[in-house]
Image (cartoon, rainbow, N blue to C red; front, side, top):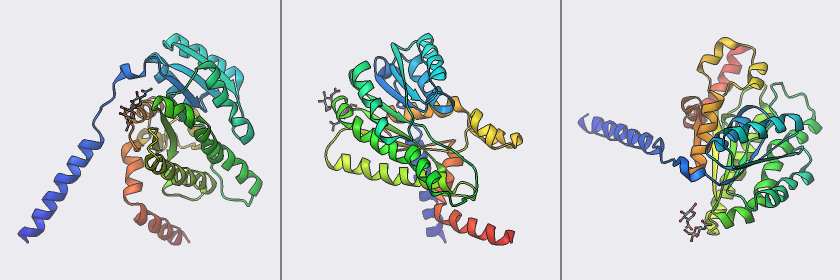
Length: 285
Ligand SMILES: *[C@@H]1O[C@H](CO)[C@@H](O)[C@H](O)[C@H]1NC(C)=O
Ligand SMILES: *[C@@H]1O[C@H](CO)[C@@H](O)[C@H](O)[C@H]1NC(C)=O
């Protein structure tokens, strides 16, 4: 019995050390000044907030999304907040052949790249209805464009010892009904970028990749989709999510979670939760 409690005690100490280690703050705000940053999906939501976080610390910023009028406003606010420079290019991430223009634009306007923040996504809440073309479009936006942009940006990023932030989701680990297609695209992101990161390591290419697993964050879009406002108290805040993305990326973490409990716990109980979902569906019938 004594042995058992010794083991439990040791486990608790290890877990506490692990949490302390992974949550330590090594971020140096000065390290962002003058850095060249791309943020995708920056016309609204978390992407917009990420652009402002970098702007406040004096970065050079290139934002992209589809809506030009929104991007103009974001660029203006970035400059007001203290960005050394701010530019935009309006692109549709569904058209894979065009996504590379973002990297060409970065070469032209920024002259290189330190941070590539991939954040754009098509987020829908609906049951799978068999629309394969819709799924292909969603995969283009949520997955293929990410792979293409990361690949095309790699030469610039390896020159600068740069970093890639991949904004993913707890839906890349577990799924629930109505998130089938979104979840599939996030699973693809997690699998691809985990492998890509290991391969860069293997090839001694000094470009870090940070996978950000976000839980539900109260962006305007999320509030629109999930009508139940009462529930929002326990969800994440877009500004805090943006800070987490910037800090985790600049300190070259491999995985980061926000809100920590909502995003990390599903991973810890990954296998159990998968079975649990099945059980719940069975109970419902
Ligand atoms: C990248 O890292 C290497 C190794 O630490 C260093 O020699 C080189 O100067 C760095 N390059 C830049 C642009 O920071
Ligand atoms: C990788 O780049 C960082 C700067 O971002 C540098 O501190 C580090 O020494 C580099 N590591 C290697 C192995 O070149």
